[in-house]
Image (cartoon, rainbow, N blue to C red; front, side):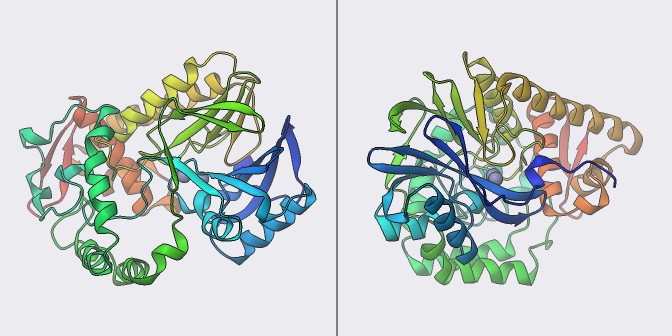
Length: 387
Ligand SMILES: [Zn+2]
Ligand SMILES: [Zn+2]
């Protein structure tokens, strides 16, 4: 493929830049599909600094963090706040170590949630212990109206999971369950690979506390934080994850967009989520962000700062509408088909896999919930869609 390199793929520059008054862009190395760096922004004030999204866990991130801070005349102990835009490891991984070194408060959305119980997604209507009820897809009780309110409805379940997750035995039990529970679109017996299962188990047993930061300060939409000597509004933007938040400073027009709006790639929208219809929530959140007046500068978690936040949000929305059209076209050709078959037509071969399947599933489920598609289980228990 001779596609131009995307800015989000660029390797992390060691240079720090002041992108707005008292806001420093510091790039940390990551190696994830399609991404070469994550932007940690340092918001500097008289008490030290707040950092946004301090990268992956591990030594190389830590070295980069200390190096970049040093260039700004700062040390880890000067960090008083870590702000996490959402529950992906490239955004929260450095937070545990920072918290340990400086005692910084850790700020995230109140739905902040990483990993979790088997089947802890919307298909089954419970946050935890479903029992293969996935085969009942298409029953009336699954046709929930999708909205951001779904998140509120799941809050209790998240709370319960959080409490249960304190218990190591429960964590191991849920990891074992996860190993034997197929993705919602798969058939009976199509479970995660042994390697993947082992990873979950190892993580549930001893990895979690070293890896997932303790959130000391939960926020929600409309909350105000004082950072870099000015006031920032928390904007809840579910879609990419249910717990995604952005920060907006109306005075200077700066907007920290996290992964919600990226300059030249579209964020992954997975279908397995606490949200009933992640794509619909994402559209909703793109519209909300597009309506904000006076945004002068968007500061994304990957790629360079950009100015037309509303335009970019609209373009991302259009991209997904084009994907929905593509799915309609594929359905005309191949008829009733499972998620994997749609995925193989929708994505280039090098992208095939669980993530592409999950994004395809998000689109198909959006169509189903909007009444544009029907879903059934075939004789193998696999979800198949009629469009
Ligand atoms: Zn992300
Ligand atoms: Zn990211």
